[in-house]
Length: 195
Ligand code: GRF
Image: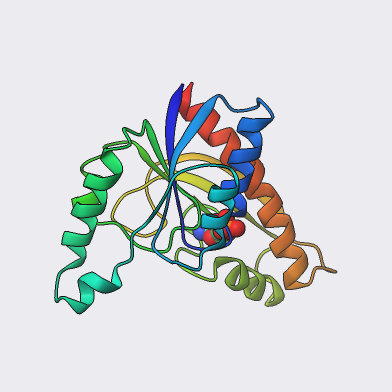
């Protein structure tokens, strides 16, 4: 059974999609740990409810002790390596990893982003796409899953899905459609990578 480590910073709905796919037999894998850098991340609650071990590992104590992000990344890599993950899934993980983390897991860290490659990298991607749509410049956006490199929301693409934006859409409508697409695409991408 392939071993997944899932990293979350927020609500964890994509983590939930992976948990559900595993329970329903659509994904043959085991989530061996859920990592969060935020204590309040609801993803931690979802993990606990599913009986999955959690690791809360915040950056703040490092900052306060005058220690670097590189040290944080290296220590986190070591802790996660102990779970022997075959694949690390960044699902709403709000921290940009340096090589101090990534070099421990070559070609084993993937990220989900709510936009198409080379568009709307960084935070608020859905809102920024909606604004560009309102300016009449685009009629679709999308979702991608890609291998992680130190540059934010960039790296070799694993899979993408286009998401249409309709004239009647509110931002909330678009967010709902994108999140539904993410939940499907992430499960597909993990399945594809593990097979
Ligand atoms: C997703 O839209 C993901 O693409 C982005 O952050 C959001 C996380 O949502 N990076 P959730 O925590 O999985 O519900």
